[in-house]
Image (cartoon, rainbow, N blue to C red):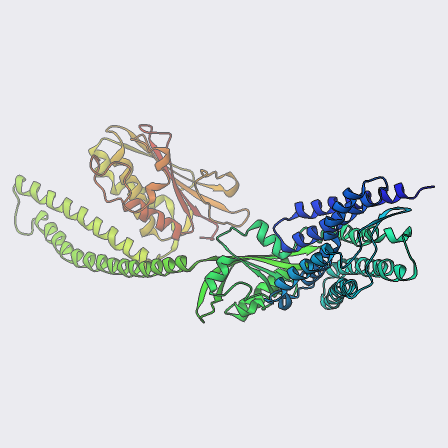
Length: 618
């Protein structure tokens, strides 16, 4: 039985596995140096096994074999360097990786041994044997030097990886390290045994002497197991940064499980004034200005797995600090914390804008206080002479100074009416000023509602008669007693009745309704926020309805705003300041009540409804 076809098939199968694993790792993340090194190592094994596939075919011509022999050793000459580099990165040997001598040394060594190989100083040209073509090592110092190069680099990498596995706390990283270390150590032992020990005790070609590149499958399968079981080469803090947000303008930090900086993107480094890798390995507290903020973030992370929009001050290299908002989330593998990803956004300009806005607000507040004080002072100063004017007008109309002619009486009546309007305006301004300053007070006392309604209708009687408007009263319980301020509720009623008369057509009707309803049967419009009341409470419901000009639906909420006019200020027919309904709303709400307006549209009248609490809960 010939073993050459079996060896040929095994070499070819190994080559397929190597190239498949290389593509798998490269496709998972082609930007990370760790993944590129792993893929490059597997490509070396692929080149080695593919060369051995041809070498195990006895029928190939010597010239073709010599051509293959010149090229394929590149795989087994280069792989020790890639193994060493891979173990350096997996064991976080930043100090060695940063050494300026590392890259030149790792490039010179393979080139040096490839030159030795091309000159025939490592091996003789391949010869034909029982299992295909095979090379014969030279018994010289150069071959021994290659063994030292191959074993020392691989063994040193394994030792570094082993020491790193003892320090890491993550069970996931420990398991991955054990898998790769075991495969690497076994491969090194068996490969060295076949290439060095076995060849020292045998001459010529043996079946096992063809197995070196196939033995390396143990190492490849350990990588494949780490990839498929733990995703070892799928995501690392560096690959996450480079793949996902390497081009982001936001400030990015990736921390390991010990909250030490493992990666900082260029915008963050530029923002803080640090150079590349200068922050690596430093605790996050090194760049956070407040330890309390730092500890609060850690507690949030541990408790919730993430913290959102927390404000921090980051310390720059020059000693200054800058405000940022942080979002941070834990990275987990199989339930173990493997790191933290943090994204920060500079809010320096926002803070400046906030400070400017705060200054503007404080200034506006001062101006508002000055305005309120000025309004109160002017109103008081104007009301004093107006009171005197009204008094003397009363004397004149009473005939104290003698009888008046009809024309004199008419003129004095006009003066009195306008002075009363002016006094009402001043009183409104005073009330608004008190409401703004918080000095507006109520004098509540148990008061029957029926007499107040009757008194208010009498007060507006001259206005209603002037437009031939009829006021009807629908009062279920006129003797109902509420804990209210009678003067202020009278002010509310006269304001609503005055508005109804003002906007109603001549000869129309106004209806004043009053009753007591349980809370469950009171239905307010959707735009009204009802005040909280205990279950089983009742409301006193007071409404004024007219058949006047009506109100558009979109204006029903705004009409209680200060100075708001339903009619356009330049075209309105009815005079007014726009303060009355605002005062009504404030007085009702100070009674723990609510007021609103309803209308089915322009020209269809409107209804103003007031709810006041009963049962002594006002």
